[in-house]
Every structure is written in C-alpha cells, then in structure tokens.
Amino acid sequence: MWMKDVFGTDKPIIGVLHMHALPTDPKWDPKTGIQGVLEAARADLRAYQDGGIDGVLFCNEFSIPYTSNVGTVTVASMARIIGELKSEIRVPIGVTVAADAMKGFDLAAAVEADFLRGGLHGAHAGVYGASSVDPGAVERHRYAVGCGNVKTMTAVIPEGTRQIAERSIEEVVKTLTFNLNPDTLLIYSNRPGSSIDTSLVERVKAVTDTPVFASNGVKVETVKDILKVCDGAVVATGIKYDGKFFNPVDPQRVKDLMKNAREARGNI
Image (cartoon, helix red, strand yellow):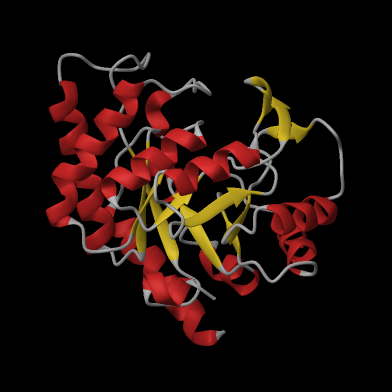
C-alpha cells in the first residue's frame, strides 16, 4: 500500500488542521485578519507535530456553510497560510477545499501537497441540497494542473448525505474504484463526531483492495478498535480541547491518541 511510502508507517493517522474562517466566510474575523488565521494554524500544527501525528490535512473547515464554487480569495488565503508555515512542516501534508475538488487540486499544485481529500464522484442530497460531481472534469483538471501524483482520498458516501440513486455500498465502491481508482476510500458516520459503523468497513474491504480509512469518530479511546479494521484514520474534533469543533487542537490528546495508535499498529 502507498501509505508507507508517504507517511513512513502502515495505518497512518492524519490530523485535520481546521483553518479559521477566511475572507468572505460568514465567520471571518476582520479584527484579527489573516494574521489571526495564521497564528491559530501555527499553534495547531505545532500541537499535531509535537504529538507525533503522521500527516496533516489543511482544510477551510470553518468556512461553513460551504459553497460548491469556492472563491479565489479562499484558495489564495489558504495558499498564503500553508506557504508561511512550510518551513515549520515536518510531516506529509494534504489539502481540502470544501466543497470544491477542482479548487482543491489548484491548491495542491500551489503548495506541493502530498495528498488531497475531496468529493470526487457521485450525486448526493443533504443539508446543502442536491449536489453532483463530474468526476471526468475533476480528474482532467487534476492532471492539467500537474497533480497526477497527488494521492487522493474520497468518501464512499459523503458525511450527512444520501445517494440520489440508492445503490448498495458494494456497488458504489466497485464503480468508484473502476472509474476513478482513488488511493483511499473514506468511511463516515451518520453525524459528525460519532463513531463509524465498522461493519461498513468490512463490506467495503470485501470488494476492493483500495485502502479504507475512518474519517470521523476517531478519538483516544476508539483509535485502537478503529485500526483493527481500517487501514488508517483521519482525526479532527476528537483531539481538540473538550472535544469541541471550534476549539484548538489539544497537544496532550494528540500524544495520547498517537500512543494508542502506535500500540495498535504494533499488535496488528
């Protein structure tokens, strides 16, 4: 599997660095400005790296509510933040531009990201209404901007959505991997912060050799059980102070989670 080449370990743990709201975002703070976003990102990066995280995923998570046509200022601001932190980064990095995969590849090209998480396929409905991704257009854009070697992570079913054309998860996985061949499949739970259904992971792994990651519900107390069935995990809210979405990353929680992850990897 590709993870050892990129992260130096099997079953890596990737920490999501939630950038604070950016210009034009509803939660943007003009008083602290871009410098405030930068300093918050620097503190979270330090907490992740000092805690022994395997990789960091930069995301405009605080841009909620998201738009499918992300403005140039968002991508430019994210590139500025990551660029300023480049000299401090000691682990592989990935990017997400929520919820615009094409802009994500633009950002990946600019900051030389190792991997990208994004919505690369499917038609779904949820709180943001109906959404449809043109995977052919996204994949062509990926190669046009020079990101053919950037590893890709995509959800089988995006968090908080239902397929517009209901199909079994096995069928979704088979057609997704045949057409797009993503490097990683992400399994989400029904709501943010809740644990994934490990039986879904087992069903997915029964029909594909593509690595399968848990993409939410990863916490200090759950990571061992998750790594028994998953090929890796993405963690965010579960290692923040008090386990709350808008709080900073808690360095001690990162250390405790990675200690459990290393023990789990050693036992598998």
